[in-house]
Amino acid sequence: VYNSMAIKPLPEEFTLGNIYPNPFNPSTTIEFAIPDENIVMIDIYNLRGQHILNLLNTSINPGYHSVVWSGLDNSSRLVPAGIYFVNIEFSNQLMTKKVTFLK
Image (cartoon, rainbow, N blue to C red; front, top):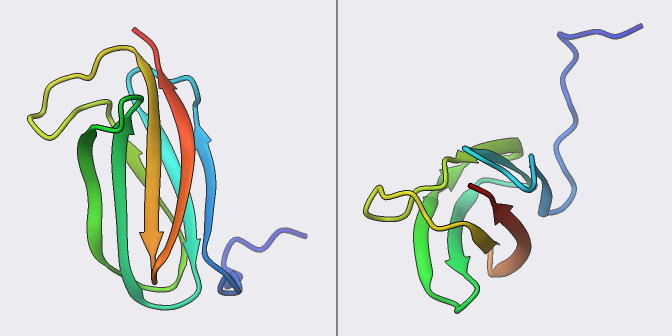
């Protein structure tokens, strides 16, 4: 029996979960989990390694989280179609996944 009021256990480790949809247009959801409260930074880079956007840079409570990237850069302009890297940093740990933006 599914209980929607049940409390999920806290994650035991930092993970970068699914990024969906991938490829995406107009937005994609980035899932992650953190075991304790700390600053989480999510940055987007293009294939040339250029910084496109700081999506998140804040202290977050432990648990399972998600953020949405709408395909915009730091100047609120739509990025060109292509492959991008999602970097997430938590407690001196860094994880990266690729995501593709289609027009």
